[in-house]
Image 1 (spheres, one colour):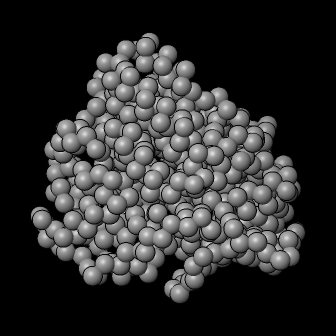
Image 2 (cartoon, rainbow, N blue to C red):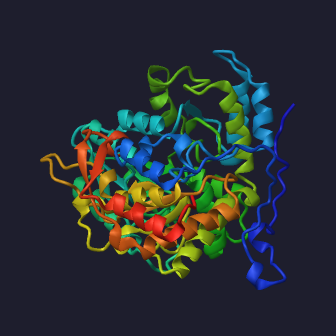
Length: 496
C-alpha cells in the first residue's frame, strides 16, 4: 500500500485565487488543520528573564517560553496526513529494507536517479563531501557560504571562496535572483587556483545567509557547464530547492510552463552531485546525497557506514525515511511549494509598508530584517542582528535567528569577520502558523521599529571557538532591555 500523492500537474495554485474585495486579498492555504498544539505567551517581565537566562541567545530559549518559534524551518514544518500514515509502513530491517526501496523509488520519480546515499541530515552530507573532496590547501567555491558547510571545509584544511554576484548583497532591490553566481568571477577563481586545487563548486539554491534568495535555472546550468569545462565537480545544495523552484516558475520565463519534476530532473542531469536536508526539502527528517555518476557515489559510499549507518538507513530511523519519501512526492505539488514563499512575501510586504528595512524581494525560508538599517549606528562587534532578535523576543515572545556577524567565525588571528549583511531571520515553518499569527508578528516588529532607539548591543560572556552562534552566551551592554520592558508596559499596559 502506498500513500503517494496523485501526480497531477496544474498551473493553477495558491497565488491564482483572486478575492472579490481587493482589501481581503491574502495568501490562501490549500490545506486544513486537524491537529493542534497549545502555545504559551509569557508576560513581558518573564520574557526578559527568559532571554537573559538563555544568555541572549535565541537558540538557548526553552520552547515552553516561546509563543511563535520562527528560528528555523528545519525539522519544524508540519507533515501531511500522507506522511504520518506512511510512517506506519516502515520496515525495520537493518539491511535490505523495503523502506529504503520506497525511498529510492521516490528519488527516481523526483530526481530521476537510482544512486542514493542516505545521511541523518544535511550537515552530515556536508561532512561526507568535505571528507571525500577537500584536502589541505584546496578551495571550495560557493555562491555564498553556509555556517556548517564552511566549518566542514575549514576543518579539513580547505578554504571557502565566495563568487556571489554583487547584486546579492544589495538589501533592497527588484532583482529576482540575487543568489546567482558571478560566472566571470567563477572562471577567474578556477584559473587562479587551478582546477586541481578546487575541491568542488557548490551552488546553494536558495541562498540562506543573504535572505533565502533564489538562484535562476539559467545561472545554475551555466555554473554546471563551467565546472564540466574545467573538470571540477559541481554540487547543488538542494535543501531549499522547493522554494527556489517556486521562484523559478514565478520569476523566470523559461520555467513558467515547466513542471517542478522537469526542473528537478534537469538539474539532476546537469549537476554532478546533489545533496539536501529532508528537514527542509520534503518536510521530514534525514538527508541524502544523489548523483547520476555511479563512480562518484561509490567514492563516497564508504563514509556512510563509517559516520552514519548502513547504506539502507544512513542514521535515519525508518519511519522518518517513509515520511521523507512521501515528502519528496509532495515536493512536486505547487500548492505545497507555494505556501511558504506566499506567506513570507505577505509578511515582508506588511513590514515594508510600515517602513521596516527588509531584504527585498522576499526570498524563501523566512522574512529577513536588515538590521544594519534597523539599528544603523550599532557596530558589527556589538552584534546588531542578535540584539534585534533578543529585543523582538522581549516585545512579543517571538523567536527569530541571528544571521550576521555572530553567525560568522573568527579569523585565524582572532579578529572578527564582519558579515556582509546583518540579518534577523523570521523563518516560516510550513503549514504551522495562521495568518492572524503572522499579523501579530508584523504588529510587534512595527512596535519595535518605532522604539528602535532603545535597542543596545551585546557582548560575549562565553564564546565557543566553533559554531558559536549555537551555544555561546552574551549579555546586554548597559540596561537597555529593562528600558525596553518599561516602554512596553507604558504602551501595552497589562497586555501580553
